[in-house]
Length: 247
Image 1 (cartoon, rainbow, N blue to C red):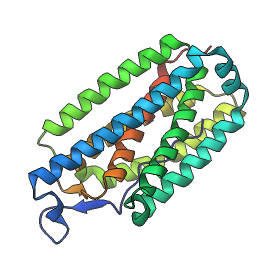
Image 2 (cartoon, one colour):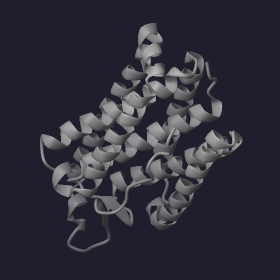
Image 3 (tube, helix red, strand yellow):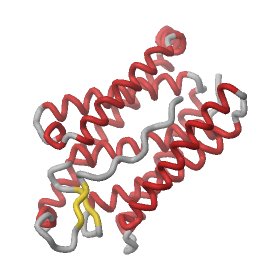
């Protein structure tokens, strides 16, 4: 499995604390509407991925097809990367209705197919166990990050450097696993990646809530939804690598 792209940064983040760009969250109603919109989108996206992942376990023919056509995984990965980069880098695309929702739907289906294929190589008990662990961890992180007074958004610079190092380590781990059969190295990578994305989830939640050093513009609900959605999916993928039992 190719290492996931590291956390997007940048152009949708707004530094708060005054200035011409901090007006977006001055109104509590604007903030509440933004948060509600983001979590509705994330809920829909996760539901679609969950339903897609369940299909191979309910229909044996689909599982056989998915496992025997790895090319579709890489096609979906390429589609995901193209749409992801477009939405993250092109403000006009992610803010233009209905194109932004169409692109978001394509991204969700691509991630859903990748998740479906990854899960098809594990037994259903392992998948359900990792799903429960992910749900519990993410719920705890969301609760903590929304209640703590510590500003996690100030760690964005440090997390970016850690992400780049982790990305290189992930590539090395895959090469070592495939070429030299040193599979424990990828397990180490998965554990570290799970921790990193848990931190990113906490940071993203605080930026969505607002009132911190950095926050996400209320116009970028698509950006925010993608970040939270991918944080949760990546955590699930990494936990499945750590605790999943292959068929």
